[in-house]
Length: 550
Image (cartoon, rainbow, N blue to C red; front, top):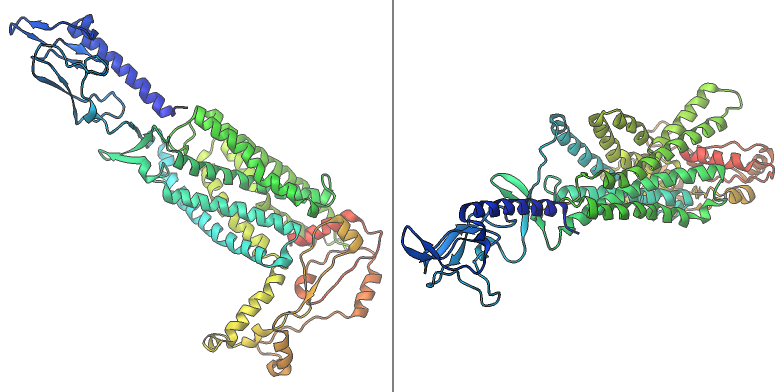
């Protein structure tokens, strides 16, 4: 399928050739295109000459026998260099030189083009950009570069934390890891495209500079597939990012209402296939539409409405679905977060906190920003959309990894181990005057990552595995040697222990489950088994999710 720019150039070339042909006929007569002409008699010089001739490219004037006619290469032929000349030889018998292979008059156009591959130059910069956009575009570029760089760094750290700590490999966090991966790939390919593309147009070898102007070189053989492949990858991972935001919303909705799957932890493969497969259903038709309808440069512009809508409509639909799910889940959270003593202020604060945590996960601002776009405030929409889109990965990494209670609980022993190693090192120990603080053990630390399965929460309770730190033996050896006065700023808080008897009392008195979101982070050993078969399953699931949101 020919490139749209190639078609435009060929159409213009045909038009210019038609004009040149008419001008030649008007000057020398209609027989100027006849390939088997007799010698032309010049009445002025009283001599025979080669006749005027139109060879479908140039109009050759009458030429004396034995001479070589020279004309500049025409500008209306694509790929011809106008600084060079074409030549045609007039033989001694006053006829044009005839090629033995074709048996027609032949002209030498070899110096007009380089080889058999024709390079077409297209102006790379658009002239219809508004003055407002010219001011805003550099600002948007700085915002996006900064946002994606910060998001990429924070997301890689968050992804590695969840990947390396196996106790965090529950269903909820596995989906979070896929969401992180979509953000990472989106940011990486955006930065890669921004680095490799010149002025956001194409790769360096796709562009040429002539008379101070930048031109895009259309390769008629490869059709510039390298830059189009990179643009397609950017488009795929951007669409995949929107898809994974939608998957997170659907997962949380199913977890609460159990409308689709009864045990989400056993059906992650469905979510993963949808998260990475749905974008292909959108991007592949977009690529086909670009090749057929809008094959311009490196596909970085949107000149055809159909191709643009193929990628835009599914994105808008996913954003609107997430907005609806966000409203529904926020209402459910509000109805479930009821204080037994009717403390309305605390209830509102808790609901507001849980709702705000859902905002970046659901991409709610995308739905709000659509109002600016359809209201005609495209500049405002462009700046806000770029700001939120580039920094969204950073916010997600902060809220769902770095500030997550269970992640901090599982990562703390590893952090203490690293700090303990540095505190005991003969070189770095002087940087840790309160090094005893980093030698505390994580005795009795339980696995806080639980699947939100209804069956596991109802029948088996929440099972936590205790694990001891590798510094436990070191602590037993030290014992009282590291005890400091009570008012010393290095002194750690005392450990909270729960005896077996207290656990039995807790289990027998627990007639109605109430979520305790702070228990995991504050205690070193705690097991809560819910043996009451009359506990409402929906309340347990929703309360566990409320704890997760905090």
